[in-house]
Structure formats: structure tokens, C-alpha cells
Image (cartoon, rainbow, N blue to C red; front, side):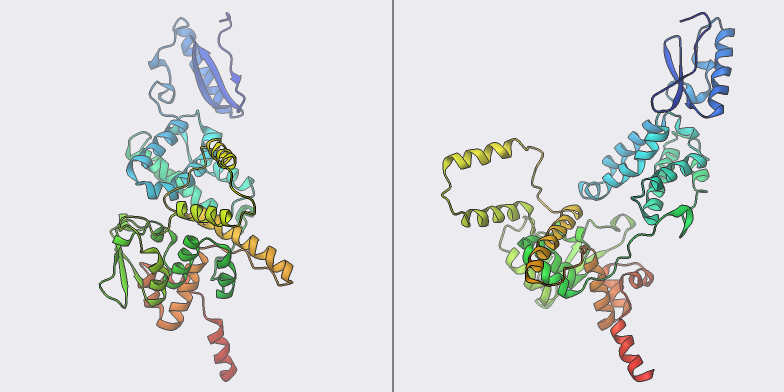
Length: 407
């Protein structure tokens, strides 16, 4: 170390740091004037102490054991993996990780205790800069960041007032900071669904049919087994779900399968009672059987050996026991592309790109029209009628008929 002492340096990712007696210390963002003030104060104390650094000389934020933003994010992710089951993690853990990513990028080495509202707003601007996220998604991710720091308050990793301070950053309103609005999710027409189903494998087609008739969430159907279905009443089969979206809030959730839904389920009940009804592995095996039956050349042992080598070269491609939201969405997207390719050859108009969750909206609209809003609330598992109204679009055909007579 030179006689002039440590110097403030800039890291590749824009942080101010220096070394005192071989210990690397961070002082915040390099372009923050406070970083230079912190460095100068510590260097003065270090000079006065005979150029020796001790823990009590450093501010609390720099002392060993002080958690960084990066460390807080890591601990929060570990907490979520320990607390929640595999189903919740499959649907939510990646979303949490994406929400925390800009926090790590901007403030990773800094002390978590200094993550104040202005820094949360900077994280939000980083999310907006990508141009890929709509306003609602940005607000959801900011809430996830706040939840991580609120958990840290409960664990006494950061000061108690930090959670309250971050709650002062309100969600973006419509039109603020140029945030774009997301696409409105509405019902999908039955003709579009019918035109898509022939291009899907049997398990996925059955899942979509069940969503159409019942309005169930995809996650409520993925793990169904024959033993879960109470078939004591021939008119209506019932499934009492133990694990569902609102289980941790003490809510009860039951699925009801009438004659139409039962007809969809029957071909999948001929299996062991503890097997999943809708298996990606079965869908892949069925697809391979169809391809093999359509072969125009014999299947030689050399072909089999080559296929085995290709599979061994792709160990990351593991077929799961059940579907998830992403695989279901991708299956529908691929089916729409295949359907439109055939429709283009036939001179027919293309199908719109639709999302499986639109089937829940379609079911809500149909049930509200035929049975009322309270039936929607019960069958879709909503706690309030306001949420049911969100899913059930107004029946424009009924309004048109009324105006033909009244207007």
C-alpha cells in the first residue's frame, strides 16, 4: 500500500470501493456524493488509528455480519423454498427471482439497511426501461420487492422502519411515466377453441375442455388423480382440493364436474387411482407412437440407437409428471400456429392467439348469463362478487336484444 493510503476506486458495475489493510469495502454507487463522504470519514479514522482498521471504526453498515441487498435476496429465496411446496414454487418462484433481479443488479453489494424508497423507485424505472413489462406487471414486481424487505424486517435483518418506508412507494397509476397498459384478458369464443383442439394432444385438449365447462384454474387441474374425485353422486362429481391458491388463507375450494365435464374425464380414469390424470409423459409416448405408425421406412436398430444417443445428449429435456402453466400456454400457442398454417392453405381467416386462462373468463360469462353472479362466485372460488364481475363480461347479446325492443 502506498504512503498516500487507500484510494476510492470504481468497480465495473459502477460501485465505489477501496481496500483498507487488505479488506475490500464498498461505499455505495460511485456517482453518489455520499460515497466520497463515507470514504473520507473512514480514511481519517484509519489514519488516526495508526493506519489500522478495526470493526468498531467502521459504520454499522460496513461491519462484518451486515447483510447486503444481494444476501437479503438470497436468504428470501431460500426462505420461500423452505416454506412452500413444490407446486407453489413451480408457479411462483421464477416470478420472484425475476422481480428481485433488478434489485441485485443496481444495489447488490450495498447494505440492505440503506435500501430506501428512492432506490425502490430506481428499481421500478429499471423495470420500465426494458419496455417489456406492462403497468400491472411492474406494480406486481415492486410489491414482491417490498415483500422481501418486509420479511427481512420480521427476521431483524434490517431496521424496523424500513418496511414502512418502502410502503410509501405507491403503485403506478394509468399513464404514469409512460407505463403501457397490458392486454385485457376476456373470454375466448367457442368456435376458436373447437378449431384449436384437433391440433393438441389428448391430455392438453382434455384440460382445456375441463376449464371451459368448469371455470377451474389450470393449477387446480394439473395434479388431479382418480382417487381425488368423489363419484358417489352420479349427477355431479366433486373434488375437494387441499392445495390451491387460497389454501393458506383458510379458504375452502371444491370443483364440481357435471355431465359434460364427466364425459371429458371418463377416458382418463382407466388407470391406477394414484396416477395423474393428465401426464406429459403419456402425451409424448402417444406422439411417438403416431410418428412411428406414420413411418414409411422400417425402424432399424441403428435408428433406435441414434434416437437413444440424441436423448442422452439432451439430459436437460426431462418430461415432467404433470403440466404447468407455461407448458400449457406453449402447447396452445403451437396449436394455434399449426391450425393457422392449415387454414391459410384452405383460404380461411386465421385464429387469434389466445391464452388458456381465457377459458375461465368464458366459463364465468356463460355461468353468469345462465345462473347469476352468485353462482359464478361459488363455482370459480371467489371470495367476493367484485372479483366474479371481473371475470364475467357483460353479455352484449342480451343488451342488443333488449335495445331492439326498448330502443
